[in-house]
Length: 293
Ligand code: UTP
Image 1: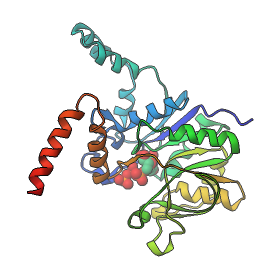
Image 2: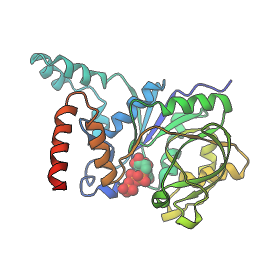
Image 3: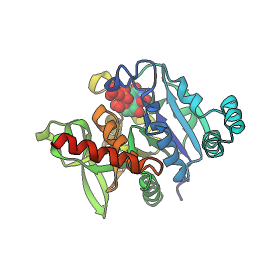
Image 4: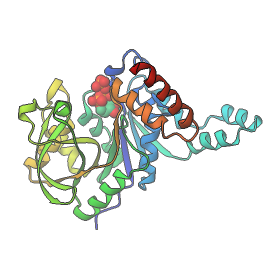
């Protein structure tokens, strides 16, 4: 029996250049979608899938991430005094997670960020969540991936079909379908030119990794932009005949890593938010009517 997946790593030490200047002094992962920072969606998703221990890889200008999940005594007292019970519950809920933080001293790539988690992970398999890929809270992608891991005991990547025009932004897989929505991956190409993409299936920001990944990252030379790329290390696993599987996700993902994706995520999640959806929908419809005139 493979060990249970109880740990999740949230790499959050990137520079977030696509959001500058907003991310000059504040982490991208703290940008709010409606009323919650992106990292909180990610942490809540992991909790829903049974994860118990959370590691955030932080870097420069990332202190607010730690503050967000810390207790806030003065704020709590203030809300208590004012009788704002629902808000108080919401704020207090954030303190019950057990977090560890490791600082990535320089943004040397996602592979390097994951390598920084080695002292926390030791020799277990673990989940990795990129918080700017937001999975609709009604879906349970990570839960499905954990089930698949328990069946295959191997690396599991989350996959999604992407249109031709977007393939150059992702790692694209080649693989053999072994059952509905499950692939054994035979090759990966990072950000291919349209003619070089081996399929229309992209890797998205959820991974179940085995401890084999650490050696693979250590032994894989830096890739695009001189960064230690996770995709290159995954390719090393495949080249060494260590099985890598993919789970094709058919639910809703919001790619909030760039400005337009972030705005789409904000609009769609606002339209689902119980407190504002009605008013926001009315506003959107009115605005669209004006634009179409
Ligand atoms: P991205 O590719 O989105 O990079 O990283 P980024 O720096 O966040 O944003 P841009 O491209 O400059 O706009 C994917 C994830 O990996 C983390 C990021 O924080 C993000 O969650 N990451 C990336 C690190 O933790 N360390 C790195 O060195 C690079």
